[in-house]
Each structure stands twice: as structure tokens, then as C-alpha cells.
Length: 427
Image 1 (cartoon, helix red, strand yellow):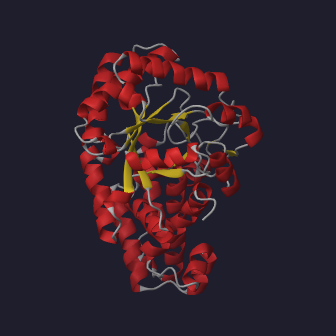
Image 2: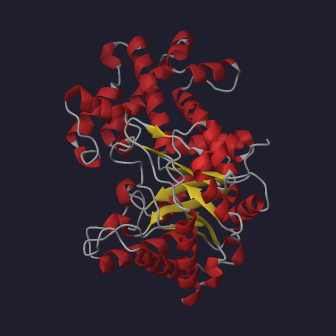
Image 3: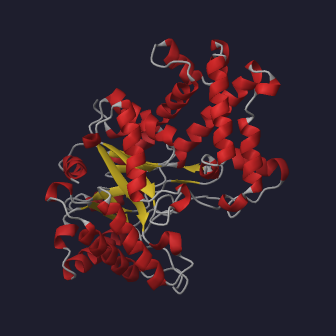
């Protein structure tokens, strides 16, 4: 995808520019991302789906890659966002969704998935084979990870039938953080060593070239490393530039490749800007934006409780908790509290496992009723100030209406402001 390769080329030439990568399948978050880009006149927007969200079997969203593409395009069309400025990416594309199968079975399914992403027009492909399958040792040897990445790259190249301008750009790397944040408590992270980062690049380059993938290697734009950022249920490990100084310097002489930083959710604006400056030019964010979505919905639920008669209320918050308790599959491996402590984790954990539940029909119906109630009874400004102060300020400035969807989008956009500022420091 030439647009994103050109941006990386600008960074490699000395400009401190980057791009946020918003990983989500929620329509309000996607709309917020595109509306924010329109307001900022951003020329490229990168939205990604993960292999667990979207795959040929439907993932947890029920969408295959073509369906997800059409889903995002429909939102873009509704708000007037040009397709030409939108890059779709596939995150953690590999055997992650099928690790209970043998390696051969899982990789065969991963090849189909990667091909489907490329055929659907996804321009940024993260080749991630870092996870062990049912018959693999733990951890997986780096050479095996690289060999499997090359195998998936061949499948991707075979699925592409367009011109060179739109050929997929690739992300590689073996030090890949857990999707969605750490499952256990964190104290301090070990930053990837320069030697490890360069060895990973060298190993992948040799494999790609030896397997006839030299053209694809020229389109590798980033490698995933650990710069020392992560979050767990209730803590954030902040970026410390001095700890990543040697790692940052190591990538400078490497042609056409920067670092991709995962788990940048909840980093401060200053930390995000420092990451981009230090060549972590692709900033991945997922739970951070859906956490903002939940904050907005809970605030609207609180406003509803103060303005709508009890018999007419949606009870969104109560309905969501009830459904999460009834269907624990998406959180039971991560949250181990009981009683009120568990309810706290279900709602407020930074890992935001609640994001898996928004498509639930009962929760979706409660959200629709909440929005309908707040359209019928427009929230009083003092309550907007109380529960959504950023939205209140934006409304007073004439940028946001008091429609509940607009208020939700505005609250999510406040999170995106930090990413835009980090990636466009001179705007």
C-alpha cells in the first residue's frame, strides 16, 4: 500500500511523523476515528481488525475480511470519508485463532485467512506466528516463527492480483505483546535489545529472499518490538525513552523499516510523541478507545438515571453486567475477583474485556433504548458537565451536539487527539 509506505519513507528521511493504528470492530469507534480524521484533515487513516475478530470463520464479530471491509466502508460512505484515504490492516494474522489445533492444521487455516484479507483489499498485513500450537514447544523458536511468517507471506502474495501501488505492506516481529493487554499483573517490562531486534530482521530477510519473496521484503515497513509499554487490569507501564535509546538508534540505518509499538493504550500524550520520535512510528491502540466508549456509555447511563423515569430506563449498565455474568467465556481467563471486586473488573479493567459484549443482542437493544431516551429528553447541560466534561466543553465551543451518539463519539475523539498530536507534532 503506497500511501503508508510513503509515510514510513518520510519518517525514515528524518520527519518525526507516524500513524495511529486503531484496532476495533465497534461502529461508534470506527465512526469516531473517521470523523476525527475529517476534522483534522488527516490524509491517511489506518483501521485494523485482529485475527480473532475477523477471519474466514467469522471470528467473534461474525465477519470475514470482505464483510469487515464493507462494514467500514459503509460507515465511511455515510459520513463522507473518502475510501482513498482509508487503509485497512490485519493484526496478529497467523494461527492465533486456532492454537488448539496442530501447527499444520492451524497454519493451513492461517494461510486461508491471510489470503482472504489481501483479496479483500487490506493494505497492511501483520504476519504474527509467535504463538505455539497444540503440538508445538513453548516458547516457539524464533527460526520457526520466521519460517511460518514467510509461509504466510507467500500466501498473501499469491492472493494479491493488483498493481504495485496497492501491493500489501507487511509487519513482522517475534516479540509481540499479548493482544488486548497483559493478563497478569505487571511490574516492569524488559525492553527488546538492539541485538535481538536486528537478529529478527536479519533472519526474516534471509528467509524471504531465499524463498523468492524479495519483492515482498521491500514492502516490509515495520517490526514489532517491546519498547517498554504495556497495561494490565489496573496499571499502565509508561514509556521511558532512556531505556529504549539503544533500541531506537538500532533501527535508524535499516532501510524502509521502523518499529510498530503495540499496547500503547493509556500512554500519555508526551509518551506517545516520544515513541514516534524514537522511531516507533506505528502506534497501535485498541482497548484504549473502547475503554473510552464504555466511559461515555456509563456516563449516559448515569444521566438517564437522573432524567428518565425508572420504568422507561434502558438499564444499559445493569443489562451489560448481567450478560457478562451469564456468558463468561470472554473474561473468565483474565478476571479472578469475586462479588463487587469482580463487577469492578468487568466494568473498569484497562484490558476492557467488556468490548467483546457490545454486539450482544440484549446489550445492543439496551444501548438503542438509552440513546432513544436521551433523544427524547435532551440531557441538561449541568449533567453533561458533571459526567462528560470534555463533551460539555466541546458543546459549548459549538463542535458537538447533545445527541447521545455525537457525545459518545466526541468522548472517544478526545483519546484520539493524543495519537494525532504524537503523529503530527508540527501541525
